[in-house]
Length: 265
Image (tube, rainbow, N blue to C red; front, side, top):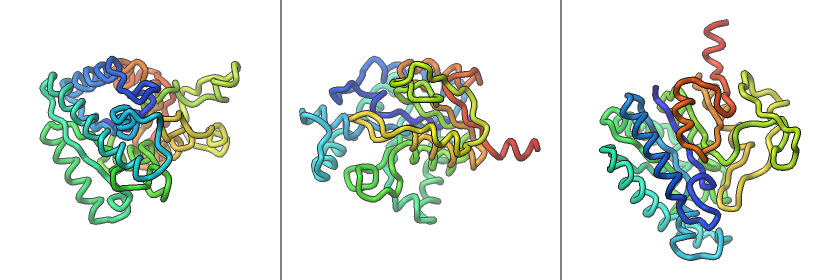
C-alpha cells in the first residue's frame, strides 16, 4: 500500500517541547519495518516549532511571528537530523520536503511536488513533509491557505494517490462527545459519510504546542475520502498500532473512501 502517516506535535514532543525520544524511536522502527514489508511510506511531521521552542529554551510557544519562524527554522533542522539518524540505523533514506500554500494552489508547482514525491518513493526514500514555517505564515495564524498538517497530509495523500492516510494524534479517534469532559463519550469505529451530524461532533483546537483539532481532522477526511482513499484517526502514543492499521484491524476511527462506495453501488 501507499500510506501517508501524519504525526502531530503533541505526539512527537513532551509538553516542554523537547522530543519524546522513546516514542519517536518506536515510530521510526515501525515505519522502517512497514517499508521493509514493501509498503510505500510518506511521513508528514509536525514538531518544528515545538522542537525549536525546546532547543532555544523559550518559555513556551512564541506569540510573535518572527520568533515562531525562528523557532521553526531551528526545530526543522533538529527534526530532520533526528529522522535521518534514526531511519539510517534501519538502512532507510529520508528526504526533506517543505511546502507552502503557494505550492498547493499553483497547478505547476503541485505537479512538480507530485513528481518529486512519486520519484522519491520509487527510489525507496521516505519523504518527510512539513509546511515551511520559516517562511510561510499559513499554519501559524495569518492566512489559512494550508492551515496545519492535518490538511497538508490529506492534500499530499490525494496528490500522490495514497491508499491510506493515518493521523496519529493524542486522541483515540472520533467520539460521540469530548471524552476529556464527558464520561459517557463513545468511540465511533467507522464513518461511512461525513454528515452534518458527524461534523457537529468536532471540538476546538488541540494542545498548546500543536495547532490541530478534530475540525481539521474532519477537513482532512473530506479531502482524502473524496479522492477514494481511507483515513484513520488513531492515538500515536503506541506507534506499533500501525501494524494493526495496515492489516485492516479496527483501530481508532476509520473514514471510508467515497469512490469505493460508488464503484460498488
